[in-house]
Image (cartoon, rainbow, N blue to C red; front, side, top):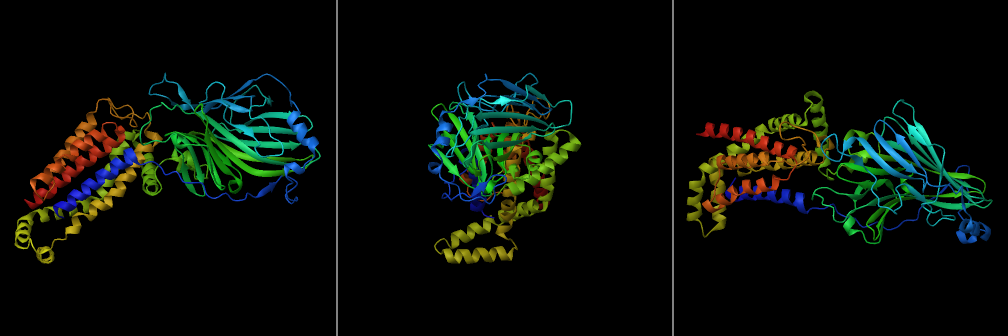
Length: 541
């Protein structure tokens, strides 16, 4: 492999890495052309006739919906829900959620830090899980007052699921009943919204379940994580940048799930009827982001009822937990569309190793060694090819001087030289190219695995997902890269060799703020490569 090829490969990897880290953002796809949604009839009325337009309904029903008072007019109350996995607080105002804290995860390292809170809204903002009926015969105010059948639920001492029922009524028109079912061993919550038609006239109701979240425009976020709306639409992940939201964006139908995410946590709504559900997101002047799952449309005959079914998931982006939902919720982990097929097996392997060593730092070291062993033969072939190419440099220079005015003849003579010495210039490139996807797959694994969050290694490294607080490992890593560069057979003029030797300095600065787990992988990989290169060099001396 000649000097230009080596330089091109190394610089290409560097450029790709820098681009992935600091510049590449998930594409925001334009919403597909709106399709006509299918109507879904309510229970006992699947074969009913097409829905009448609201204007054809009796004016008495419309006037009743506009002027009737919601009963009972009680003051706002709060209902606490305590489980082994989380504590939640619901409010009768809007039948919404006031707080949701994860017991197993804290804001910062240390037992005294606050628990992770998934609900973030300012005073006066509507709470998440508010329910409305836009474009329906009868709409209800999202913050209308509900009545509750419980004051608190405690699931910490038993294994049985428990229910919370919230309801509000417009006398003589409509009653809405929200039933939450909590499970002591799951982050998932079942939600049934049942709508009772108290009139003698059919009602055409279109559901909208909303999650509201305040996003501080001044909040500092790293360049490789996303905080904002996310959805799985038509079997493809959609991430929407909060700063780019203008007006209302609508995606779907065929929404498998949608919600609001951060790097390690997600609040997701999973509808029962994805093919009849759309995903909408918007932002107002108070920096409140609203994500809504809309649909399906129910035609509810007079005196009957219809229901809207959901599963709510509020919890960590743990691959095993997300996959158990069986709706591809695991795709919420930002492994990338084409790297996830490499990243997911590596994450599974990493978790398997942890079961035996009980330290993710050690698990990373073992995984790095295993990967290096798999590619050991390819590495040997690459290093040997570069060594042979280095030995041919004097003869290559002679040919370049002899045929400097005839490129075609130079190419022919160069290939003849390779053939005579049984050297394949591509044998030094291909092993390196093959390993590049594996590196990026492992890079994604270590960057987004929640298992590394607040997970200690040893001594000063107490959080593998955070940077080395003293920058010791990045500096050592840069040193090993420099040693590796000096040991690697290099061809070309002195100026190009000096350019190559600047790569360790560039990578050291890049890795200063990278997660410690990723730096440990790169450092150990360099150390093993140095040993492998030393072995090859001794064989050819």
